[in-house]
Image (cartoon, rainbow, N blue to C red; front, side, top):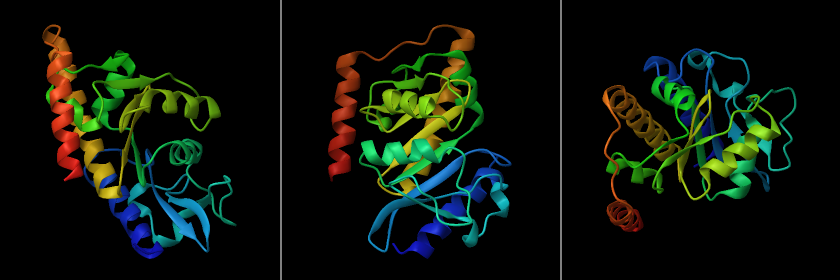
Length: 214
């Protein structure tokens, strides 16, 4: 996919943030791994602009050295995107302040295997990264710890991060995580939900991973 198409994808999903009230106004950010003139890096949504106002010229290239292109300001949370690309095999990242991911990030330390679809994250639970100031190195470290061996995590008192081999997969996983958070929140209102056994969730994980390998 060329640079313009990647920018168009970031704009498309940023506008869906607002249209679907998934991560409204200026919240959240999206990036796609990219190489520009033999320089590895990523394209990311900018700082401070409302999601529905984005245009191609607003999208920012950041190198793997952490240097943004001239006269442009990347999302204030570019650092954890950089660190995730350095430490994870992923090609796209969606960070959203989706309603139930925020609520659950404020209430719980993890989302356990109460539902088999947790395995879509390629893990047995969705962990919650420790709270730190947005944009900080400390927050980036917390996210890396929480998302290790997984495709998604929540960020305490903040929101969620989901990864994908491409932006379509990353956004779809973010939607799935939001739905799981909603289910879990309502389960917990009534009583402690039943948890799927380690044996059973391993069987689901194996099935999903084998399906992805095709």
